[in-house]
Length: 257
Length: 257
Image 1 (spheres, rainbow over the protein chains, first blue to last red):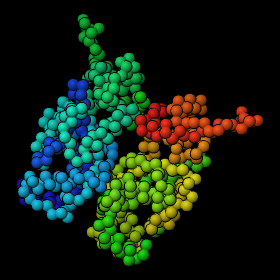
Image 2: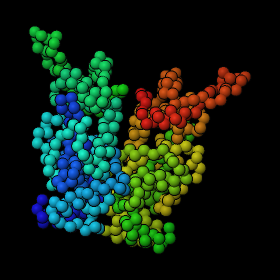
Image 3: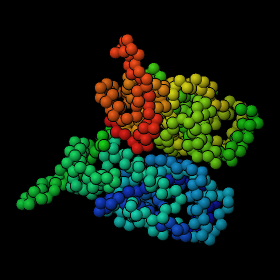
Image 4: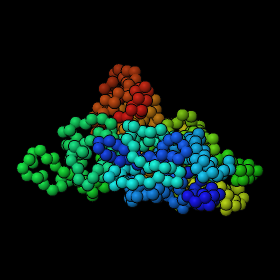
């Protein structure tokens, strides 16, 4: 960010963005049987955070979340779900991030500036296809944007550890009512890959026969093509989601428990 | 509200309350097999709204919700659940409510006053025992606070129709994972009364034997006392919740589907 742009943001940002409200996004991806989350390493602060930012004064929070995720991942039309708003008066996010601005850019932000005020943050989680996010982009205050394993999280800033825990809880609860997978798996996948995804999110093991029966019963899967002949008995079937049925199940709910 | 207090609220309220953020509460009660909701009839506006208000600058949104519900219902320790944050830039709540202040109190609120700014509202739903709310209190801008039948709602202001729909959806989803009833039924109740509560919330009919089996299987109920002798076969058992087991089920979740 140019220094004159930054000064303008400090002085006039509250006219463009809604003060006191931000969004933060827990972006989940699935890779090699691990659930990954997209995190940002901050410059001049010893830790990582979720991607997030302010909402334009004319913008719905959902639209802001899509805009910010497009900037980080390059992806349009990400599956996004609002899950919880974090409103603790002691959330020190803004104190810390304004301090990071001061250190990074050698500016002083007045104590009564909008960037130093309390912020309530609307939490979203997103499910994206890992392989499509090949070059995640940090923002002005961060130096790295990278996938991290959910079981080996680095030091997290602000209340983002809590945000991630709550996002995982919400994702697991969603799994019971709604199908998951369309945005986390490649276009074609085996039943075992789908089972591994469910097991990873639920952090448990599932019975193979029951899982297969349950998922086929939901009518959201279709077999793709033929199994190659020859060693056919060893080659697993490939499936893809029936997008119409999947959308219906997403809308009307399912029972998976 | 005295006119000098009001002028102080208009001029300095933003120093006490967090601007741009409010809460709104869908308070549900259960009475005569109907789900009721607590609504406020506005002075000088043709319609009703949910109870709500601003968050103190030092206050968690959850605490604000408890504070505001205590003012309306007189109840402490209400079961409250945050369910969704409403962030549409076109929510005209504040325009309308500031207009109601202007009409009620014959004051003019400047266009750039904090009360005329866009507000993002955090939605909560609450489950309360209908019989305990005997004298619900309107606030300064409203003339009546009353229970309304969920199937015969009056004209709703702002985006509160959507808020109620979403709160009902969230309550129904909660019902699948967590027990419901402790805050909606009297201390002792029959199995049929509990079934009617579930049926009312889910807006469906349930099989009596299955419901009974399911609920007893959750281990959250205990039988209270003996059935009177004589026409015992006609007198239904009374139950109450085992609060310890109920709390556990609330925390760990159940499967009711």
